[in-house]
Image (cartoon, rainbow, N blue to C red):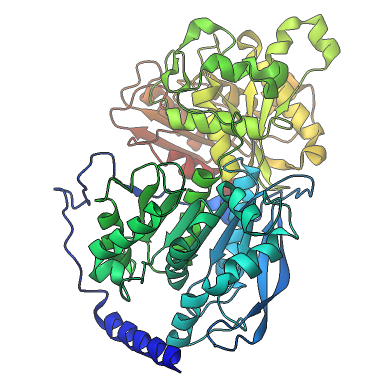
Length: 623
């Protein structure tokens, strides 16, 4: 009874505090831009990146969610009556009992149930996990959605607060949940007693949203040694007091620091807290004040073991949750060591990586006289501007994650023996949704080399994220039209095998690649160069910075964009050509970006950013 009265007192305090928890705050120093500051320049508030739109749809390679039940107890009662509880377990695509998997436990918020993680937002969390694993964003992981509730149903605030406070009690988490999951599924835990769980802690994370975040802090407090990673989302520690992260952040941070200091794993790299909240979240200051106070304690919390993240405009909902999980998982469980590239990876190491076989050399221009740089972030291509090193790294990691299926030969071995230069050709396949239309992206290079890393790979990757199947062509500069004709023929003849629609395709290109797209987008030239009459004409041609001037009634619908400061391709020439096409009744769209130079690629971070979205819309309108 005394325990019960204590809980009631705590709950009443929580309710009263909740009346002003969204308005009253502890003042934290800020810089001139309103950003939180600490007494070390190493810490900074990090903004999350949005989940790609494609990731909300079903991936090609889908994992599965299975329901399990395990024996537990009602730990809110002194007599501990038995309870049988559910948990939902996500198993990644290709789950294999002979492999070991990292595991993440994600706790729902108030009024939630065990199903919530994988049912909210139309199953978005599962789709996002599928895409992340398929795209090589993180290692394949097992994700568990449990509940603190003894009978898995939504409760009022008071009873929920009782239950989260005892989820760790007598270690339901350690003694009931973890053994139930990790004895059945293949994780790094060799045994599911305490020794086995602690020994595998580097491969385990616990996180939660709202009251699930408060639960995460209870796990941090009572079960610190059981996992290396913590993902509290939109919630604070209540050890010192209810909403203590907001009202008494310094005392709360000091307590959390004492937990770290008491553990043999409380070193710089022995744990990591990935604390997150949306900037418009009703619980913002509960998270923010506590995070800022922790970052003041630099003798315990450092950038190696603590990071604070905000979602711009994010509210207290699952839209924020899925974005936090999307950003945190690659940090917790990145692709296998040795399988991922970084900005400082040597270009030569990428080309010679064993995963790429004999086609790694085609990722960068075959003629080394047209590119320079030792590392991925140093890459420079002749005639190109605004090369994005982060996109270069992303592309290289995508290619490696899909090395077994990403490269396609368009010529037979016999043809390559007759003409060895044909070994310098091929298609890189960036998969979208099964049965979706395809695009062929052609990089420029003045018909001297192929600048794919900036002028076709990024475009193909972004199109695949939108669900389209995209191919980037590596061609022989002196036989560019012949190679593009062969590529179109190859894709058309193998459409079923590749899982793409043979109709409604588009041809994309920049500079010389734009001329290629325009020529093969013409129905007469298509038939002449392929020697076929059964292959349909492209539904749209997407051109960047190419002063092609020929106009024909057989040309395809054409979208074009260019910079007004392009010294190679005149924007006026491009505009006049589209005006000529339009006069023939052919759909067109033209964009000139003020002050832009030649070869801006995706135009990320410039006035041209977003042009690809316009081009996709144009393609869709003319399919």
